[in-house]
Length: 219
Image 1: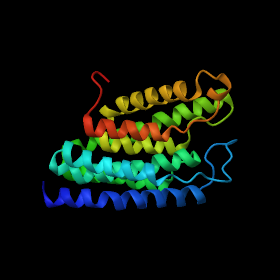
Image 2: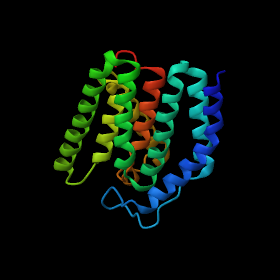
Image 3: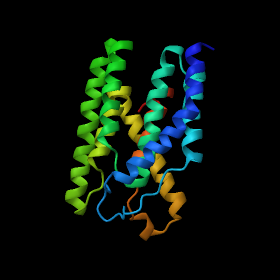
Image 4: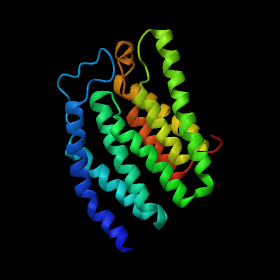
């Protein structure tokens, strides 16, 4: 284990504490992202959630990824943890996190895999366009917001990290996890099933899975 690996593992608990604090602060000051969702009293993310997630990201990055990808894996994973917690509280994905994540994905790709920079740029454009078009179609059909611009920007960031080839796997994983969550948490209650559900946490899991493990076969 290298000094870089030890440093990343040592930073993980501190990052967990900072993630909880930062997500709580963002949840307190951001407006509610979906009409009709009461956001007057944001629910602060729990440290018992943020800490193991941050440590888990570091352990996986150090133990399962190639050495040259470990630091990038921590950067990606820790940012996704905060985004998931904020979206879970406020139904909003702040530009202050999604846009730098997009830029970091393109920068890391340009440095580590310059031959894949065009795939990352194409993925960013395709990810944003796909969810913006889907969200607009839903709004016109149902007369309300279904997918916000934050989701589109997060999928654009996903494209920068995994390339256009990985976007299908990201969306498929996120959609499957979201459906399973609805089925498990709402127990067939049709009225409950119509309530808003933040899609960001599931997108975050999809991005992390595809970047660290790879695309689904045939996706």
